[in-house]
Length: 135
Figure 1: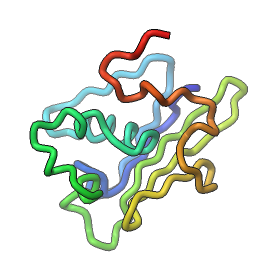
Figure 2: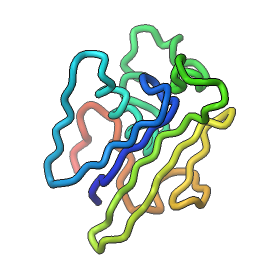
Figure 3: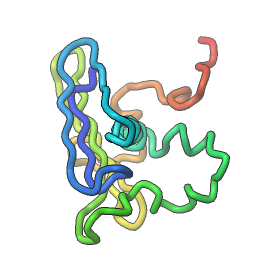
Figure 4: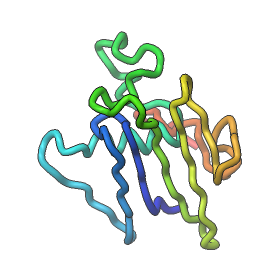
């Protein structure tokens, strides 16, 4: 699978909607400190896996209690919080994976509610571990 697009709204460093189209085989995301690079990668992680690596490595785990930590503190209260990743399969099929914060997170693939991303056939066991386990 190839990541085609990342969209986030009211997520971490993005109080409004951001939509990043990722074309090409190699993608480089660069910008000044505070520009939102980490928020984009965390939107990707949260959309697919429901958590972020930073949460498990934090020296201050209290900041990650509940689900409020994903919502931008600068977002308008009426703006929904979500992270969405569009994937393109080898045969050209598109999958939109969306995790939305509605009291608690909900996950959909192409609009259908799911528990996790296993229906996509992606391995998830080592997705957020620092060093993948040997096969």
